[in-house]
Length: 196
Image 1 (cartoon, rainbow, N blue to C red):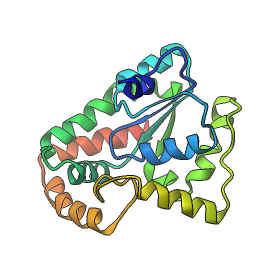
Image 2 (image 1 turned 180 degrees about the horizontal axis):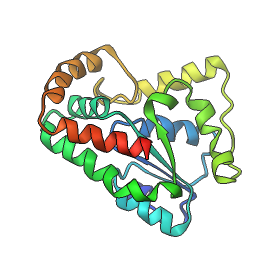
Image 3 (image 1 turned 60 degrees about the vertical axis):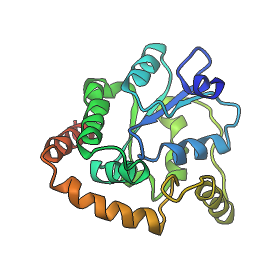
């Protein structure tokens, strides 16, 4: 219970890292915390209410956003009891309430930060005028960090990093997502969010 309580925004929170599920949350948070072990991070609530609470408290906020096709196919590959309809709706419900609040947080697109995550983590201080420790991995250390992160789960579908089994399942799911009647309006929410 304490673990989940510690993830919520509270008086001790020093930074909030949030995004829709399967949008790089685990990887980005672990990378930040690898050099900021004692920093209290609100994370993995997957709720716009958590972000709104952080805004009220004046806490630095990073909102991660991933293209819905990638995020939702990864989510359903992880939990195949979810329907595409519900997953698409959940995506829209996460980002729509944040449209008018973008001045209060730093939005990071998954497709941008996944190629060069260290430089994005190290830009946090510049964005928020904070003094968090910068991530300083050698190439070998970063490969080791990624390997540990990939091996930290019991199932290939839980992994925060790509693997063959997960990518094969996602490819099958994506065909159904693309043909779903709610996909176009979900894409519009994504485009409005990253473009507004």
